[in-house]
Length: 257
Image (cartoon, rainbow, N blue to C red; front, side, top):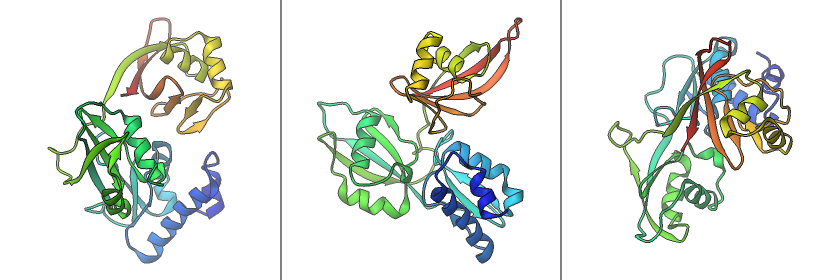
């Protein structure tokens, strides 16, 4: 596949970003070595890469640490899946007894170190702990620099990737009935809003599909799409699980917690 054809097939995303991914593929084919992306990719991109693997001439393997990870590092290889990915799982412990910390607190403090969101996977918060998958190149920097989260002292350690130490991504699941998979209809049902209110969110730039802002209310949503609605949360359209007797769609929605 030619480079511009590849880039244009991901037209919603930054051309330089997709160009770097293509260069990884070329390097893999040239050297016959495993080549990893330097950032965690979102589902739309790594799923599409997997579907294009035959055209690209490489095998595509993904790893996000957790079961049900959203963000994943991708490996390109001509042969088998690599035994290890360049990812560390950092456990951050809040040492304060007076303040509970949220996902927003942990992510904000990590990004305040001057790091991009893409170098982290999915942050999972459990009690006084936050589990942070990170690109291995930046692990030592985080361990040596991060001292507080939201003015609370914290303790950091790298966990071994074994089933006992890896938490699960948490969701709230709900089946919602929709007349169609139009974006305005989905937003209305997810947020329990009127159609006019959902249209206002969309036209105001408050709604993203797969991390891209969408302004067209009649945009069709697909299973596995990630919908982020500012002020309401992030949701995955997990699957269409059936129809009602009036041919309305029963859709399983997962809300990230």
